[in-house]
Length: 348
Image 1 (spheres, rainbow, N blue to C red):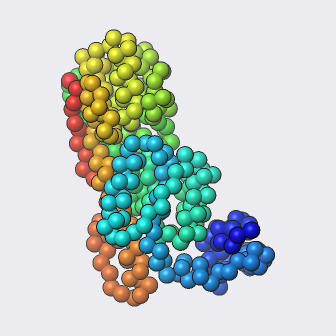
Image 2 (image 1 turned 180 degrees about the vertical axis):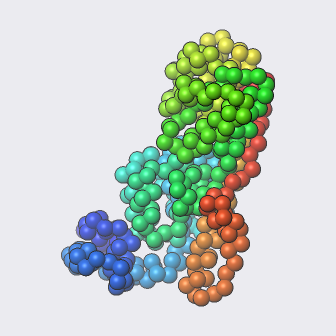
Image 3 (image 1 turned 60 degrees about the horizontal axis):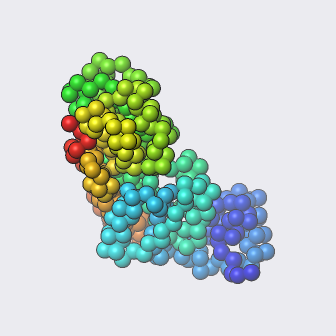
């Protein structure tokens, strides 16, 4: 058996690594029974905590962990490019981990990051499982959500204002006289989807249009998800406009329309919310809500470096300037980057 790590101790004792660290550092905020259990595991595994404890205290690994729920997602890969550009600028190493959208794998990744004493974590993706969020709240680590939205705004997040973007887009179509506007979302549980629906409803309300839940089509994100069923649903609904959360779904709908000899945009208009390189590679080119994906990653990383620097300054009793972070805190820990609607060839 190799050298035991703090992760091994935490797993064996059925506690978080933050709890192991507290026991190692004689922190009083640990129940006595838990403390004794952790000590017993430390002794049995012959874990030598001194070096790790010093590392956890100093936070000088200059390493950032990135969790990707789907490494094949084009949007996420571009976000990571933005993260790495700033990480290189500030001399941070990056550990990239793909969770394949598995809650269990995400927990293992977080434990691995903590055992490596990362300075902070960036969570990239559309939405975070509640189990992952709860686990992160128990860990003593800095976190920024990149392209994600926190359900309760406990973590810093960087994104576009999806509610405002959806409102702007829906209003534009309503002003043009469109009545059957369909939203194609991944899941009602997604914060991104909820905000898109909220903006959609707000626009409908302003035009005295009744909300029709049947026009919200759930369960579609990738090309494969959307390849066969979505277009049939849209056709049955008599949809004039299809607004998708993801470019791959928009591409699938476009191809289905071509297969069924439905003219785009004359008979069906299509617009997506991502603006990855896919939308420029199609013919016709797909209209989108422009989301500055690279910038979201870059800004997320910059915020994380600021959080880390402030924490270091506090520990040394040095003065520090929170600067932009004060404005982000005032906005429920959210930073919205500008969006705009780009009309290409799938809208009139």
